[in-house]
Picture 1 (cartoon, rainbow, N blue to C red):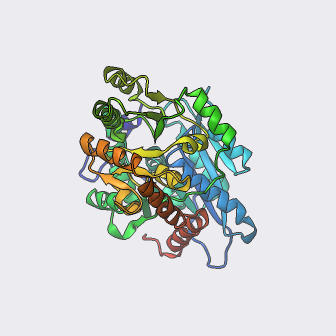
Picture 2 (picture 1 turned 30 degrees about the horizontal axis):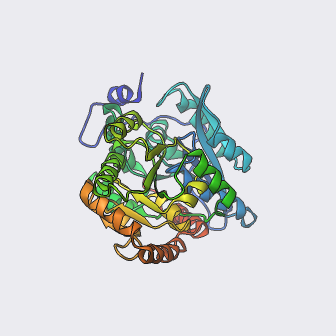
Picture 3 (picture 1 turned 90 degrees about the horizontal axis):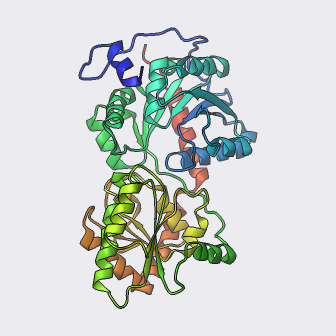
Length: 419
C-alpha cells in the first residue's frame, strides 16, 4: 500500500489534512536539553543516491560538524534510504568521509516498512533534533511519531512539477510541515508560499545555501573535456546544470539557442552543454533535433565532478520557471563564470540585475536569447559579473551556514514545548 492510500485510510480528509493517531514509540524520551549539556544529537535524513540539490548543503553541514567535533557542539548521524541494487554514489561518499550513518532499507518509494526501522534508530540514538530534508522524510517522521521523541526541524527545498502522484505527495507535505517546530527554507519566496499553505509565520526561517569554493579544474582536464565533447576550438560554451524536469526550463533555452543561430547565420559560434538527467530528457532531445541543434548541443547526464564543465564555460544559463536558492548559481560564481538567469523564486534574492548577472522574465525566449548574446559580446560586463560574483560567494561560506543551523537547533531546544 502506498503512502497516499495509507494517509487516506488513517483519517477522513479535512482542510488541514489527515489526523494521525498517537502511536507509542519505543524508547520515547523528552526532547529537552540542559544549556550545559553537550553534544546536541542530530539525526539528519536524506533521500537521494547522488550528490545534487538538497544534498549539497546537508553534506556541507556534516563536514563542518566533523571539523567542529572537538568543540562537541553537534553529534550528527545521517539516515539514508537504500534500495536493493541501488548504485552507491552518495552512500559511498558519506562513508568515505567518516560521517556517522544509519541505512534504512526499502523496497520502493514511500515503503511504509521503513517506519519500524526509523523508530528503532530513534530509540537507540535518542536524538535531540530530527532534521528532515524532503517530502518523504517529512511524512515519515510525522507518521512514525519521531516528532514526539525529538524536536523536529523540516527543511523545504521546493517542489518539482511532475506526475500526478508527485503532486499528491506535495499536497501531503502541506499538512506534514505544519507540525514541525521549525520549517527552514532557502528563500523568502518559498517562505511566503509556505505561510499561505498554513505553516505559521513564527515557525518559518529563511536560510541561504552554502558554497565551498573548490580548486579549479586543471588545464589538462579542460582540454580533455573539450576533446571528449568534440567542441570546436573557437566555440563559446554555454553551460546549464540541473535536473531535467519541466520547471527547469531547458526547452526555453533550446529555443533561445535556435533563435540566436537564426539571427547569426554566419557568425554563430556557440555550443550548449546541458549537464543533468531527469524525466524530460527524451522530450528535450527530441526538441533539440526538431530545432536542428544536434551539432551544437551536448547532453552529458549527471556528473559527479562538474569542475571541468565550469572550467570550459564562457557563460552559465539558468532558464528555470521556478527556483529556490539554486546551488548552481553559487557554484558558477565561485568558478568565475558569468551568468544569465530567470528572475524567479529566490534568484533575485541572490543575484542583482546588471550588477552580477543579467536577469530575464521566465519563459521569455526572446529576452533570454538577447541577454545571452549581449553577455557573450561584452567581455567587460562578463568580467564585472565575475568580480561581483566573488563578493556574493564570500557571504555563503559553509562554516557560517553550520553555525546558523546550530543556532536554530539550540533555539528550538530552549523553547518550552506545548503539552
